[in-house]
Length: 121
Image (tube, rainbow, N blue to C red; front, side, top):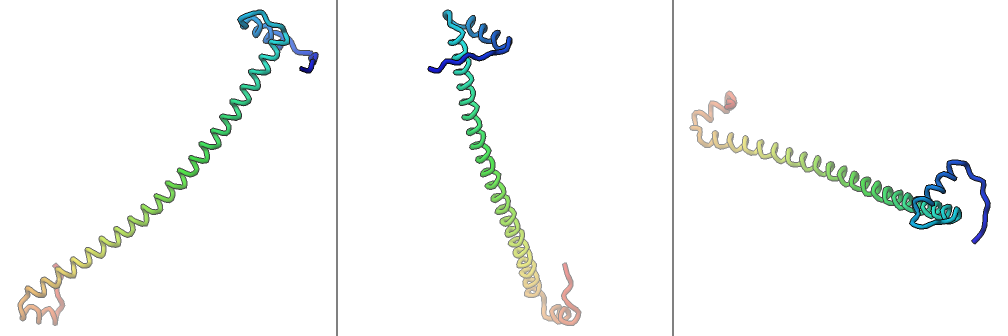
């Protein structure tokens, strides 16, 4: 283990003393500093893990948004198809109604319609 002799500020000394008071047994200044470094390294590792998790979650959100956009597009296309089908059904029903009126009308009425046009209902 390498030895170093740093000069530290008073607030750092107070923190070392706090670590020593919180320890279950008497520990040296060096052991207190090692524990501070260990906690710092653990904190850094945890922050890196959380950053990676956050990036993963952001990627999942982007995928979900892309899927939602795709589904919205499909919904719009399907809605347009349904509207076109409904319009086609309406036109066919109108045509069938006209054909039925023509079939039920007498010869004189059909002749009149041929000259003047068939009135709308």
